[in-house]
Amino acid sequence: MEHSFPRIKLGWVWKIEALPRIKSFIWQCCHNSIGVKGCLVKRGMGEDDCCPICQMEPETILHALRDCIREWLRSNGKDSSIRGGFQWRIPFPIAVWSIWKSRNQMVFNGKSLNPGLATYIRAQAFEFLCCATSTRHSVCNVIKRIRWERPQIGWKKLNTDGSHMGRNGRAGCGGVVRDEHGRWISGFTKHIGSASSFVAEMWGLRDGLALCSYLNIQCLIVEVDARVIVGAVLNADYVNIVVPPLLDDCRQLLSCFQQVQIRHCYRQANRCADVMARMGSDQLVDYVVFHSPPEDVLEACEADFNGLYFDRRCPDLVVGS
Image 1 (spheres, rainbow, N blue to C red):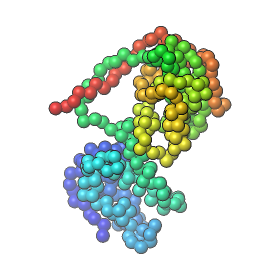
Image 2: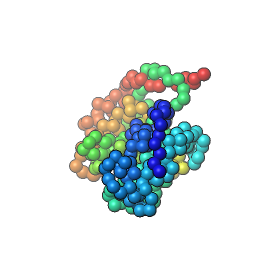
Image 3: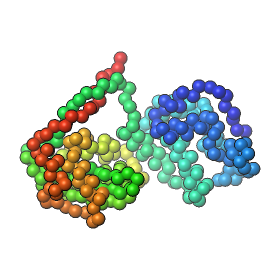
Image 4: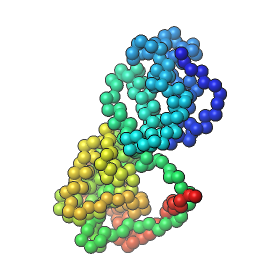
């Protein structure tokens, strides 16, 4: 039997660490208001409440999402115990949302159940941790002076970036290699086509590392302005079913250098790579290597060479009492 939930406080739903659409979905679950057959029949929008997948039991919310009664959602959504390297409250709402989407793909689009769903959920949880979670600290914003820094003597620096041009889906990437004097060694642009910003960033890193390997660089510093990319490459436990070849290539290429460092930088210190990435998204050819700076990037290159600072408002973490 479908549960009818009494009116109670559901403020905890909006405190779950998840994307807004997932919070809204869980809120709808708690109000018995998602489009399973059992709910639709009760609202006079159908006569058959049988589950379209197993065709054996009524399709209630509990049936569609395992045991998702209110208390099950609430207790799991607040559970901080460590499971599989995560606080359970992080992957849990992503899992509920992903199960629901997978069910809809099967019912309405005839797609098979995704055998890699668990791997996908884990990957999404990791990306969410890298991109969206907030720390439990007091945060003050301070103005910091940011600039591109030259590598130490004997080292080269690679800066890469990805570009995703909004609704039209055009994506590209690019990068710049410079020496300890700030001089241009090489650069590249690549047109990717339709791709997410994450994939574009990963392509930029992969092609930048491949270029540096081709140039026989031994000691390399790599900077990107996407923390999630740094975390994905350095965390050996991270998996992503969307870009496994790219991720594997990046890790393998990093091992080719005698000494290598990869780190995050602010976008103000990554302006040359940003320009190159936007050039890549607009170009008609697949891949271009530049042995000297193209006209579009000259201004940013000159600013970096002269050590020009840019102000940026940055979080200054102060541990709370």
